[in-house]
Image (tube, rainbow, N blue to C red):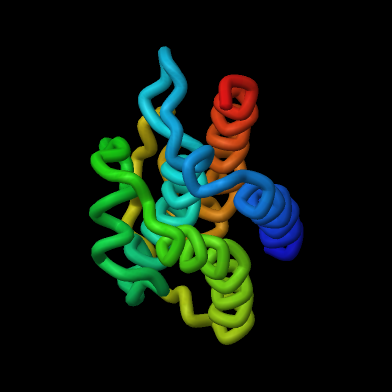
Length: 151
């Protein structure tokens, strides 16, 4: 599992740099032809990892319900993120992965509700969820890199 955590940490460091490299207005900009913005993609990454790993394991997520409702699958930006929200997401990028590592080391993940992803891959345990999460984050990093060209 360490490789999966290392890949996720690399992804999150990259996302942290993106958050720090753009203004609030730029983070909230939805370029023509796109459905979302930089901050939505980054927050969505945090939310999905928590849902795939914690929620499906029957454990409490390390993020607020309001964050989940705003950035879960099937949502889109309905209002601009505030600077306070951007700061929270910035902190959650690494904090959630650090907590995941602690919980894995403590064998906190005992059960898992099998979950068929939209790609057709079925997640059967937390290990599957973390590996799939790396794939999911890669998709959204690609979207983020595309959006950056237009802001």
